[in-house]
Every structure is written in structure tokens, then in C-alpha cells.
Image 1 (cartoon, rainbow, N blue to C red):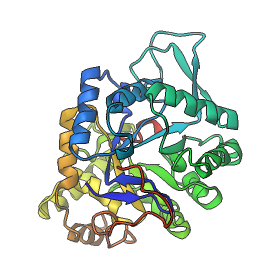
Image 2: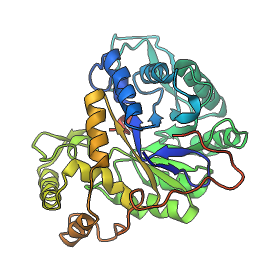
Image 3: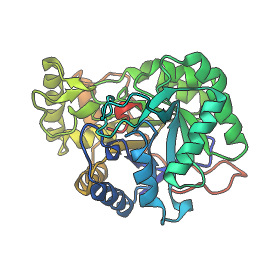
Image 4: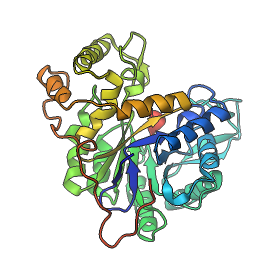
Length: 355
């Protein structure tokens, strides 16, 4: 599987990444054996980028990911995690987490984008994963914490990057406007953009994508199925869009896109995975994968041919914006070398940032 550098760093990501939110029991229980099998299957498929966070299952995702990767060569894969939610003892447990993960609530999340909070969060993640370092660290959903995130958390991460402790830094969110601010105003190298550059929502063309191009920074595309509506060849009523039941007009639009995909010999989910790569700032598409079968399906979809003429047809029919780039990012782009003088890279949000 091809790899792409995060711009101006030595960190390389495979063109398909493994999102570990679901192995933290997002929405339903994932047996430990299924989680391990999913990571093994991802490795066999050539995936070498793995994304997790303390938020995902109150640390369960980090525990499982670290255990499954522990015997793999550390210089062959990239791991990202996130800061902003410290896990602290829950003084009033009710028995089950209330933020979408089927886990016990012996711990709770505590917002903290201070320098101390960032350092404590990274240290706790290293303990849970058993890893000796993280390759990428993102600020996780700082929507209501801009000032502390920009003035304390990001400079702390920049210091760690400059010391060589981490390879790249950024932020991950379900909105694009603040991510664009991080690209414009902070030392972020990369943003994890959830659901805002998809076949059904290209709003990031108004802010994140031009900001990334202007500053020579990168985008990790996640949430490309928009919580499910784009995940099947024929969208159905009752499927989710951004965590809610999809409104009828969006179901109809998704079906129209599916028809065009069929006419070009491809499928809606294959096109949904390929679409973010039409922009040259996109370095990887990362998908949540719960078990071996999901990994196999997603890897097959990512490898399947999506003709570039599809995008022209969708533009002509008004199904995607007319300013969607006509040249592909990942699929038609030569590998970018690591910056001069830097060593070889470690090879390779958002609630459902990887979904």
C-alpha cells in the first residue's frame, strides 16, 4: 500500500488508515478477539496507520490497539492518539458510559487543554498502549476550548515535535471552520477532518482545504461515510447521517450518486472512500473497522478502480460542488519524499471520526 508524507514532516501514512474508535466498543460491544483480528487483518492488508484516542471506550481502544501491535516492528507503523480529554476516576459511576461506548464508567472524561493536561494525557496513553512514543498527536474536539487549545495545548505539542518526541501535530474535529483556524494560526502540521469533505458535504472547500494548500499542510479524511449513509451500495431509509437518521432529501441525493457510480462501473462506498483523495492536500482516508470482515471489505473497496470521469459526471449533474478538484490527490499523485535532512519516517474525532 502506498504511503504519503504529512507535508513538511517525516511522518508517512498509508493511503488507508485504521480507525480504532469502534474497537473501543462504540455503540455496541466488540469482542476482544474481533478487535485483535481486525488489527491483524489490517496489517495483512498493508495498513500501517492506526488512530486511537483516550475518549474511545475510556481507554479501551488504546489498550487493545497497543496489545495487538506490541510485537510488530515499531518502525514499520504509525500511531496517532489525541489529547484534551483526561481520564480520571469517576466519583459517581452509574455502571455504563454515557458517551456512546459500551464500557463501564469507572473513569470519566475531564476536559483539559493545558500544558500539564497535554503532557499527562500523552503519558497515560503511552502507559495504556505500551508504546514508547506516539507518531502523531491531535487535539481532540477543542470546539469549546479554542483559547486554551491554541495558546497552551498546541505550543506544548509543537515543543514535543521540535524535540523529536512526536513526529507531527494537529487537531481533529467534526467541524471545518475551527480546523482552518488551526491551520492558519498555529503550528499544526495536519488536521483530522471528520465528515466535512465527502460526497454529501464539501463544505471544507470553503476553509480547511484552501488553508491546507496555502500553508503547505495536510488533511486526514475521516467520517467519509457520514455515519453510514454512504456505506452501502444502495442507501436506505433509516440509515444515519452525522449520527442522526438521514433526512429523506439526503437519502434521495445519495441514491442519485449511487446510480451515477453504477453507470461508471463502481459503487457508492468505493466512491466515498476515493472522493477525498481528489484533493491534493489529503494524505489518507481512515476508516473505523470493527472486525476482520470490515477490514477486508474496506481494503477491497479502497483498492477498487474509481474512474476519474465519475467526478466530472457528478459535477455536471450538480451532485457535487463544481469546485471539487479535477485531479486526484492520492490516486494520481507521485510519492512525496521526506524533507531534506530528515530521517526515514516511521512507516507506515471526533466521536466517530474514524467512521
